[in-house]
Length: 463
Image (cartoon, rainbow, N blue to C red; front, top):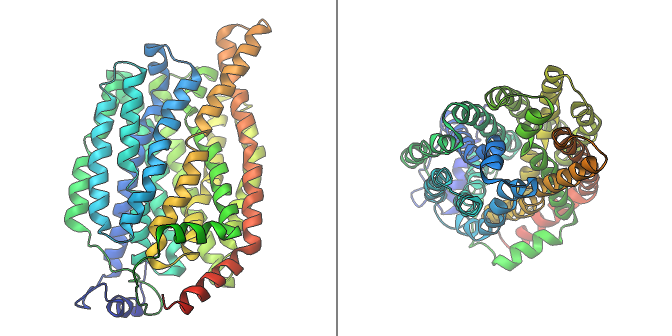
């Protein structure tokens, strides 16, 4: 990605007063470095979050758990604290040093990932997962805000999508490392292996990334006032119809994404007879190819069509289109018995499903002022993660248990019922993508008006 910054961005930094000397500079190469380092950090963020999903089956067997408990461990336990703590931490990120906030966050979540490997029962693991959520709450809102200050608006969705690629880079690395390490040394060793390197990444961030002035890459000079009151920011954002639909759309799609990805490993082990090592290696390839390409292209397509038309609605139209396409595609993936074809089509499914996050964040940033970006991002993530991460895996797990019990009551062998119960639970969850696409379409109806209204209000207030 070439993140060229206009020279006026430097003038904006000086005019804002946030850089007292007026000498803050950042080359294009350095801006690229910041974006890609934040991507690497998000990879570690997501490895520590998703490592659980690859080892769910051995944990289920050791602790004798139900699928709904697996869903709670991989969803609600993490999301409840990750989402709620993201709000006050994001408020800090709109006024304080964001590099320091991210550094501290990395140390906390890495430590609790290691603690997860020491768990002796369900409750120990639940508490450790809560700790990971507490640590990770400070990362994304701060990172989104830094990226928006380093990267000019016309390339911002691409940059945010590069950062968001960490979701799939982390998932792929988690599947690979988790699968191989857990297969050879047990599931506890997998947590130790992915948790400890985060401390090195935290040190690299602290030593090499400069905190940018607010509004550094805006196309025109800006004068920064203190951020508006917390309630005013939240109230103004929720009052925008486009944001309400956008946040619900993102949340509903995350409901599907987390509901499915948490059970990728159990599905292929139960329905396709794959070993833990094999499923980890294959899913690493599938998630990396599909997720990285789809996330990047989602942002790049939006930026490209916006450059041609100057119409911000492309940032919600493209996610809507991809989600409509992905539903029948996904139904085929989970109906197949051929393992290789299912894995190939899952790669394409993930690529289409991954196109939403960067454009959703970019759209949210267009609706708020410079000192409101981290808080607005956290508000979006609060909704997205409570609906998606908090409820998606639990819903899929609970539905899987219900289908299994039904199939067993019909005389089907328990092993087959366990596999088919999860298969049908996933196929039901997939349909919610159509509901998500509807909200993206509805968000487009008022997005331009809401952006313009917000710009006029801030201009009138001298912000």
